[in-house]
Image (cartoon, rainbow, N blue to C red; front, top):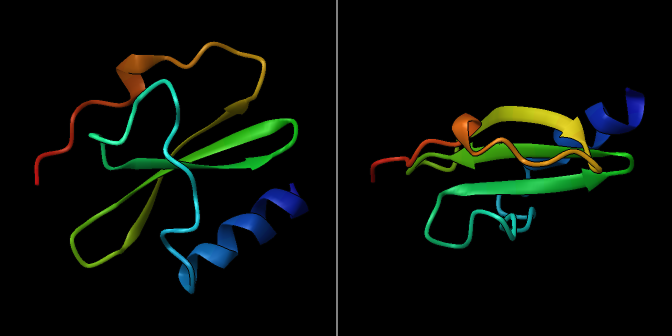
Length: 72
């Protein structure tokens, strides 16, 4: 848990540091951080505020219902 919190804290100064989840593609505003064995999903708003959306174990299938399209 401490590693996850530390990884998430970096988003305060580097909000765009996460990658685009391959299952969702770049057209979505969602990004992810990897902190084995977990994946941390977040999205950014227009002001680069970070919203943690979902944290899951990496071996699980990504539930697309957790990631509705975000309007611009």
